[in-house]
Length: 318
Image (cartoon, rainbow, N blue to C red; front, side, top):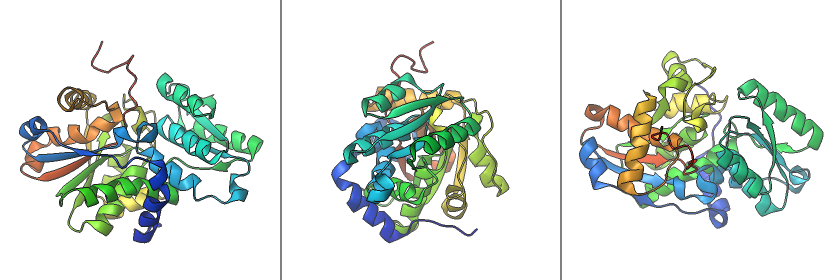
């Protein structure tokens, strides 16, 4: 499948461009999670990233790549939360406005964070058509430059820097596992593994209740996300025209996991690693624990994509 993707140089340039504005996040491990999984696991902790998620990488790379003319009327996007926060922060750093369309069912914590970074939030109905049509109106009214949350080459290159750091900071892994929603993180992960870690396979984890990427991958044709019913709010979006071909060319497999699998994995990370991750970040560990025989005795890196959990609505508390 023909792809349009960032190159090796694009990812290294992104890493240099964003270095002043992001954290180089730690790589952690857990003896307990090794024992229960039967594998050697390490975790790239993007839950410790600026604005609480890997999205700061792409947002900073995109905003700091724009010309003065492109910046004149600010930037705009649609996002369920983490890209919204990251773009609002990146815009604040450059002294420009950020206009963010968010679904009405977005986490209140994430809406508040966007406001806190100075972003202007416009709420819409919780479906992709409403997000896109509302964004068109916002751009029409403001003249802002669109920064798509995942279907954007500078966003993908920025996301890829997380795995570039992981590869630089750890020994060779058999697998790297990343969550998939729109595919920006997964695309960047797969490209960095391809360029910088020959032989490392990339696998995606996805909620079974929002398994459009899994069905697209297996059918080798794009399947949109329609009314996804998952608590993993960051993974409800469809793949993009850029991300889908990259995933088809460079990803080994996509593993769907149940809501209960995801909740149990999130709880284990909180309890055993003593770190806060959001629900979408737990799907990678859920995939390993669901498929222990596949991953037995393997070295696996799992990307914990974010830590913006709503502490008033933890999924294991009824």
